[in-house]
Length: 382
Image 1 (tube, rainbow, N blue to C red):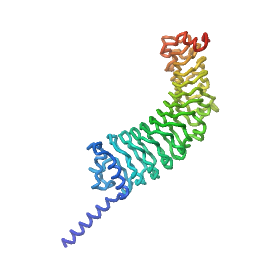
Image 2: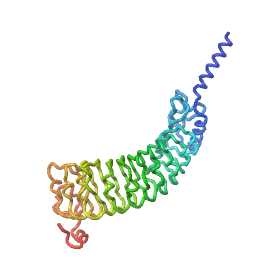
Image 3: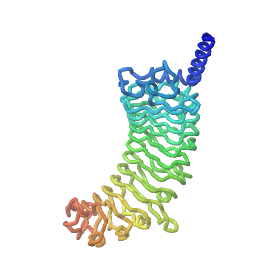
Image 4: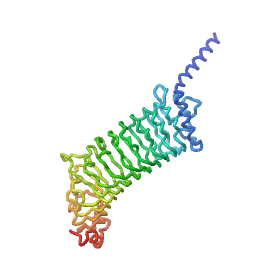
């Protein structure tokens, strides 16, 4: 009788052990390859990866000593759904065998020291919704195969060393809502963009050409555009500011030469903030910006604008106004200096007259008469 009880106890313990070891062998193999591609010397003893001990099942619960973080599994503990590493300074390459984790919805390796190319095999991750590789040292081009990820909603490859042109089939990412490729070494033109995009960030690259209607066609949900610190040029068309959901625009530090602004249809627009500073924009300050009812921040600083400051810029909605570093003339609207004004910013370094030196708005100091005279080919008009 005792022997039978012992046998039944062994069977019970064995069944419990097997019940906990449910992770797909394919996933275990991929996780092993993933960790093997990281330099052991870059894995601190306190980090998530240090707890990846494959003597236990990766998805086994509870996780008291092994796989304590960095991995998330399905409720039935059979498949890995997320790899979210801590910023521990891991150094290594993203192993192409990560493609075997076919149930992954999230990869986040941000703020580490991963290097080398982004493997094209990530295209096998059909369930992937978020890919975040920001603040590493990945290099090479963005693989075209990334654009086949139909479930992808967020792609953040910012602050790396990626180069080459943007994939021509970028618009194939039909579920993409957020795209951040800022601070890389990307070149070339803007391709046609995904039509469900909410936020676009491509700051600090070497993109060239102009902002074409073709690239932004159909983007009815787009709210944020950040294209600062590139080599974009030409005219910013009136259609751009009329994108129906647009709220924030940052095009600072490019080479734009002209901006066209038309009044929003029906006087309705969600536009809140526009930064066109440090370009080469010529002509008069665009008066129609005053007709955007929610616009509270406008910067046209350090361009080549002439003429007078539009009276509409003194409207009640505008709270931050930067027009410094141009060749504006005449007297600024008196409303800027009223006792109840709430406008901050700068009108300095222009050719204005009657800008009170006691006002913060009039700093830095105005251009010299000689500089203004030369700019206007004679005496500046008042």
